[in-house]
Structure formats: structure tokens, C-alpha cells
Length: 360
Image (cartoon, rainbow, N blue to C red; front, side, top):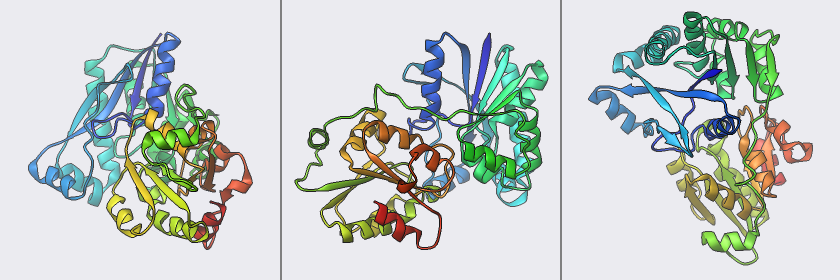
């Protein structure tokens, strides 16, 4: 059986860890002898003005990698000009979605032989992989499966202008896989029946994420300091992760526990703002690092915080716990499911940052 994997989430030149949980799944497919072709649905921006705009907005490169950890990815590109972006942002997202998914489906039909089944990872705008899968499945007359990971439901499906397309795609899939019960319930709140749904949380790599001696790791990373507690964050520095509130949360923790060193592993559009607002704190910015280094930083922490505003299934929770590190999280999405202990979850209520910091 040949499986065509379509994904909106894939490793890029600037961020090899992007969609790492999908790369790991594909490695397991290989171990099981699954015959698959992985296709990255990527955009190629054309025109100097659009590229200048991306640079000014500090948007990272989305140049897809063709190989990571032995897994091969086959990028399929759709060119996107300034007019396409204007339509997407200021006219109608629905027209942009239909345009882009048609173009991706046509390219896939032309470039790849017929497969027996299609598995789409992600329903992310402006070209949801699930919608592309549905269109290709209609051409090939084969079933398709959609896995939904988080923001594709929490943010994208929440949009009324494209919801009918989302519902049509999910209801007609052979199976819809959700990474958490909370994500499935969110989709149901938008009108999805759930009759073809299954919940399968993401896992972690036990060969990478495992307990290590904290002081040894701290010395190895060059961050050791005597009589110090380590509190950290791992993830993209973006609003949906509530990274904008990290300075406030960390300052409240430092006020109660002065001998605290803070670790931030990740990068994103809020980095410079966070750096400025954390002046005076004992904080180390590690940036984006390979998974092996992420595991070391997690082991170096006494506590990892995840104050996200929305999450499908936060892999970092399981990874940190596998390292023996306590995780404090918000009550958003699949975070409580992943953490597993109510006392380590701060509810989304008034004075969130204050209550969250107390738990940390």
C-alpha cells in the first residue's frame, strides 16, 4: 500500500524543528515498513516588494528541507505574489484558499503516481493540507485521512468565512485524527459531527528525552551557577504561546525566588521585545537548538512553564516530563490533558500571570 503524506508543517532551512513531531512519526513509519511519499506544501514568494515586506516584518524563510533525520520530503511549490497576499489579507480568505488548494492539487496530480490512501497533516490557512487531500482524493478516487494539530482548529476553523470548507473536508474524510480530546471538542463546537473522529496524542522520542544529572548538564551547557533554581520556556516566541507575558511572569517569580535563572529555548517575532523587557533578570536566550540540545536544556530546568493561549497537544510537556522536569501550564486546549495533574495547571481567569507565577 502506498501512502501519500501531505503536510503544512515541515522542516525549513531557518527552523529544522518545524513540524518535528511529523518527522518523528514518519521515522516510525519507515521502521514499520510503510511505503510513503511525504510532500511539503510550500509557497515561493515572487517579486521584490513581497520579499522586502517579509524582511521588514521579520518573517522567517520558509524554504523547505528535502531531508531531515533520514526522512525525505518532496516540496511542492505554489508561487505567491503580492496580489495573492492582498486577496488573502484584505479581500476574502475563501477565494485564496480555493485558489491555492486547486494549484497544489493540480501539481500533486501531475508529479506523483496514484497512491492508495492520502494522509494530510494540518488544516492551516491559506492552503489546508486536508483540503488539498480531499481534492486529490476525488481525482484518484481514494480515501483520505486528516490529522489536526492545534491552531488549524483553534484559530483557522474559528473563521466563519472558511468554516463550510473545513466542515465539508472533515465530514468526508475516512478518518479525522485529533491530537487531544480538547481539540476534538473545539471542532465539534464549530459544527463538526465527530462521527469519524479518533484522538491520538503526539508522543516523544525516549532515546532523546530522558533524565540526566542536572548539574552535569548545566556545566556542559555553560550555564551552571551555585544555589540557583532554573525556570525555563521552550517554544516559539509568538503571541499564541503567550510569550509576550514571559517577562511579567518571570519577574513575579524572581521577586519571590531571587536566586532564579531563567532559560528561554526558541525564537520568534517577539524575541527583541522580550529581550528588552527582561533587562535586569538573570536570563539566558538559547535560541533555536537541535532536539538533543533541547533535551539538555529541559534537564537543566527545575520547572518548565507553558502559559499558551491555545494548544492542540503540546509535545514539549511530555518531553520535559520524560526528562524528569515539572511542567506548569495554562488550562488552554490540550495542556491539562498532557500535564495530567490539576495542581500544575493555572486556569484562564483574571490575574492569570500572577496565579501562574505562584505555581512556578
